[in-house]
Length: 306
Picture 1 (cartoon, rainbow, N blue to C red):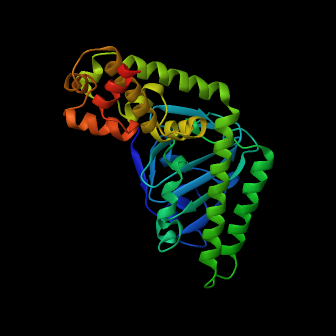
Picture 2: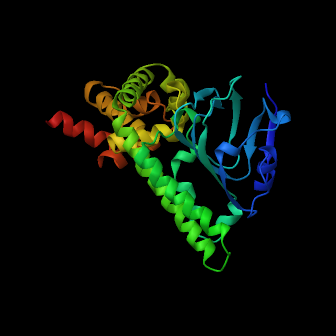
């Protein structure tokens, strides 16, 4: 297993990539074609204490996040938040013409701005590398224009307006990325609907097995792990394609199962609650009423009356 190298500052990042010192200690736009990792830092995993947003083309290598690996010979965009672990693997011969940019933003730069907490709403910072964003040439040009605005602003004379202007540009960049991810969820229908189909089969199997009684409700993390995607990616995908989060999807399937039990069996509400993984019947009754506006007994009665 490779050792983990922690980089706490943007200056430290520049040093490990053989780049000149950054012009600003808390934000930097890097020309990817100029990046070269020092030999002593190869074959390591990395953790940064800052945000890294990048668009790369012809990387001539692979990026690994957790157990997933992705080849970046095509143009693609990805997002890394402080504290995430990833590794970089190089092919023997780096492809010619690598290009792109990297935006590094330290959390301190966001302090007391709209993005200080707002950046957490962008779920793609929690996606795995294999869930990266593919952008068209037109989209790439749009993002590149924003990056150039940021570069020009902090390369110029920093004044009282600079931080606000740069923050607004970063926010625009993130909003465009959000739009492009939504487009990707929709346009890559085959792969994404295969995930949905696999999720349905997985949930049905789980809800009809002893796992429900023994382990309780399946978590989003468990389902995502079985589907080989990250929890945030699974929730984002479901939200775009079905209008529900992964947690809401689990609850909907559970309500369907509960309705089935209440309408086709003579088991008591208590027995059904335990069979569905609830530790207390009261918790089940409260959950069921929240989802259906009826208590389990009221639902059973209304069903039999119909």
